[in-house]
Amino acid sequence: MNTMLPHSTKNESILKVAVLGLGSVGKTTISKSYSGELNDIDQISMTKGVDITVKRLIHQGKTVTLQIWDFAGQKQFRFMIDVFLRGVKGVMYVYDITDIETLAYLHEFVDLTRNYLANHFYPNVPEVLVGNKLDLEQVEVSIEDIHDFMKNYNIKKHFLVSGLLSGNVSEPFEYVVDQILNKEQNLADELISKYPSF
Ligand SMILES: Nc1nc2c(ncn2[C@@H]2O[C@H](COP(=O)(O)OP(=O)(O)O)[C@@H](O)[C@H]2O)c(=O)[nH]1
Ligand SMILES: [Mg+2]
View (cartoon, rainbow, N blue to C red):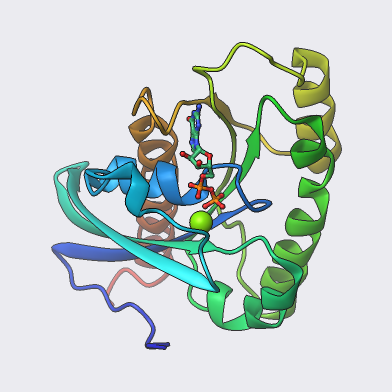
């Protein structure tokens, strides 16, 4: 596996975003749908380990190459979490709105991720919560469940999407990119104000 850290230049940002959640919530479908690779849905088999999807976009006038790392939910792959999270700039936690267990279980991924980020000194990595399968009718997750989760984990933003119908899939990714670029700009401004002659 290629574990090289993404590099960015002044005009182009290469941003690694991690997508986490239990198996079958639709992580791969959302990622491929956003990148435009969801041509043949039958081709998506259960992700083994990690799937990497690349999407290029222009955001805030900057060329962004988004590397979307989609982590298999299965327990036997948890040992890969370090490689998976190395160099990550944004995180997306995904659950399935038709299966309350997928939200109930998400805390494990939040804990794993935040432990890694804290232990490796990654400050204020933008996070977003995504409920997938909006096209289905047998919804099990209530607004209260979502609010409770966001409150407990201090997650500020939530989106409902359908990876299968491609409805709204770009919104959570664009939100994360926006947050990352704002954070980088703020850091740059702070440096310039501290070291004006730099
Ligand atoms: N109805 C519906 N099914 C979905 C949606 N997203 C994914 N699926 C289906 O859910 C299953 C698991 O999706 P997948 O992307 O492999 O999940 P992953 O294990 O989280 O990567 C597949 O059969 C998908 O077709 C969605 O938005 N709506
Ligand atoms: Mg997958």
